[in-house]
Image 1 (tube, rainbow, N blue to C red):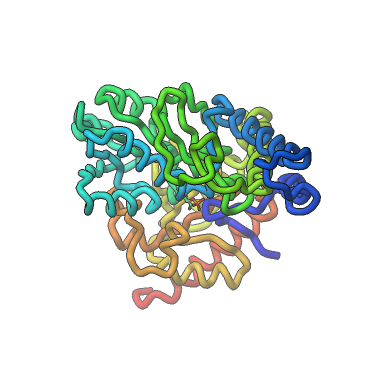
Image 2 (spheres, rainbow, N blue to C red):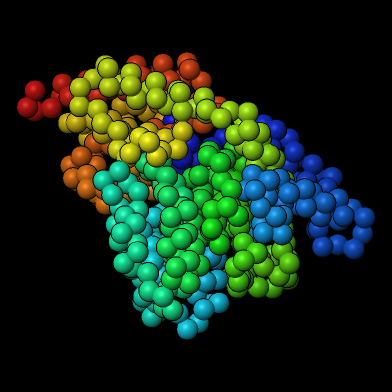
Length: 384
Ligand code: PLP
């Protein structure tokens, strides 16, 4: 039996989402732009999915643009703001953002865009005083700060960030990839202008996502051509992917409605507290009052996370050290070091991320495997 605790990297597709997708590969394969009746079926499916995503985001269907995923949504939002405000060339972001935001900004900084990177508190939330000092009225085109962090699950105070961005007349983009489907995300009430969504983080398929574009925001398309998505994102629609995202969004919406207290958080808390009971030197990274229900970023004193991952893999537990893209890299996680965790501590961190498919039996198995692997690693230390 194996246990999957790497749901922040990707999630299994919900069987209902897969079932909904399948006919759009075969009998309903048609291009939604066609003039014949069969195309209307595909176009209607895209329309239905847009409504389902809008319901999860509490926004209008016209504010949802389908993209290829979180990365495309992030870059589209950044370039949209910069292109709409040609006279403003300053962007403010945060040190714990995903590379899908930090890397495009680094590239644009080589072509004249000025980027200010704001730090975080020890709990992992953006430092609001630093953010207030960083925005420049009349100069800042965009504030780009994620809703929830991929490694720690730390949730940022989006309403306060929105107020600060608005005070400078800047657009606010939030990478909401790790928040949507896990916590309530009322986009219009949040003050966010652009928000990125990725289907494969909420039990939908890979290679499909969405960008929320507030009706209050201006928009400049990243992909021009055939004029799909009302001219906002060209390219023939990925109809099966869109149907999968829509179905996954509808299921996530229902889950949030049915569970004001998420049972996933109960399992996650049991995992962390059991590890802290079984072992000494186990610390949760990030402020526990502001963490997504499914995530635990945990330091195990004296245990190199890379070695721990190998032992856990052999024991049938899949998780990651920092984010998936950092696994295998000797560099400590920039997210954890930005929170003031020393490099040595960051290197002892495992990211354990659950989903609504994680069972109590999975967690019991993980507690046993992690406890014995940490004990084994500590017993092998030269000092012991
Ligand atoms: N933003 C965050 C916070 C993520 O966790 C990820 C995926 O790891 C992405 C963006 C990229 O999303 P996608 O894989 O859909 O391009």
